[in-house]
Length: 315
Image 1 (cartoon, helix red, strand yellow):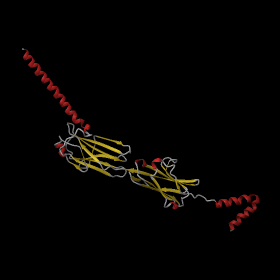
Image 2 (cartoon, one colour):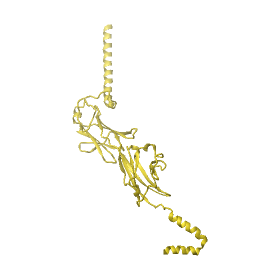
Image 3 (cartoon, helix red, strand yellow):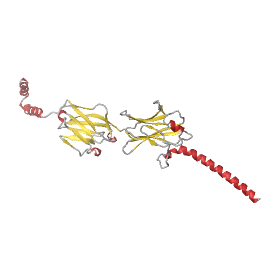
Image 4 (cartoon, one colour):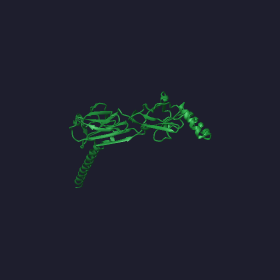
């Protein structure tokens, strides 16, 4: 009451001309809702999302307040291309990026406390990266950024052993369906790293990595070798081993096969229809050279005998 008396006392001193403007402005300011300032907090650290699974990203207003009347926008690198858009109580799917249509859902059970959760279904490699959680109330807005790490680990590792030649025994490890690109190593029976002869990778249409690593063994001191792969994000490791002691002693007949644990030779040969048969060029080189030399030698002998007998008959 005292403050009101002071205000009207001041208005009395400034005159009736200003009073007619001051009173409506004061009442309008008191009646108009003011948007309370806030901050937005998201989940800390990268959020791991399994390929083909579901990931949920939450963000919260601080201090907690009702966000039903606000604009809530989830987007990647472009504000104008939302992953999910909510405004004034409605989900607006018209502006959503095409690849996220029918794959996102905004959970609003706690929206009156200022908390929402974006759910993404059927996670793909393209979902890897940053997400902006954007709140706008009138002219005030704030956002938080959350990072998603998509991971995929293959359980299928194939070891191929090619026929030995004068250069050594060629062992090859193949696998696919990884994301991101895994760390790939050869290890011996003591767990020590063996430098690979070659290592390469490729990506399919789904952006999953396929890996290929070879090892040319020139000496027989390796009893067995292990092909190890590790996902750099999750640290999950997959490995497959093959026993080489018998292969190196009786390696004239070796067949490629899929290994899940320790592989043992079973005395079969590499079929010509095998898709990896073309990799046996080192073995074919030696055979080709030997056949060429034998052909020339036999041709010379036949020519010598022919001309020798021809001379005898002419006499």
